[in-house]
Amino acid sequence: MHKEIQPSQEQIESANSSSVAIVVSQYNEQITGKLCQGAVESLVCGGIARENIIIVRVPGAWELPFATQRLVSARSVAGVIALGAVIKGETTHDQHINRAVSSALMQLSLDHNKPIAFGLLTVNTLEQALHRSGGNKGNKGQECAEALLACLRLGRALDGFDE
Image (cartoon, rainbow, N blue to C red; front, side, top):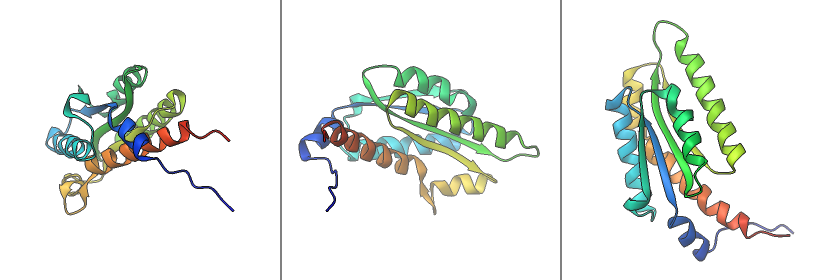
């Protein structure tokens, strides 16, 4: 027989009282602004109070790990959503940014034992980015917020797990 860990209503409410940060790149703002808006809407719909949402804007995707590190180091922040958009250009510059940022964010999550939702669009064209920021492929900011809420709640359930 197995045991499945699911958050209780009390653990969900506890997670919902958390402060959550959104770090958003200002580069490709026509995309990242929509991602941020989707994330905020999903957090609020999921039970996070607007006053518990912290938004930090950074110049570009490269700076996402810097601000995220500062935020996950804060005791008051339960989790972070990192949002950006890197659109492939004529060189392989995008690959270096995407790989470094994704690795850094994962390592920060593990080092600080806090969820960090990865919302860095890594696309080939502006059209693909538009589709993923509220177009026909949904809004990845919204999806990141939903994933972060699920991880915050699961984290509360795992905190209560002692076997």
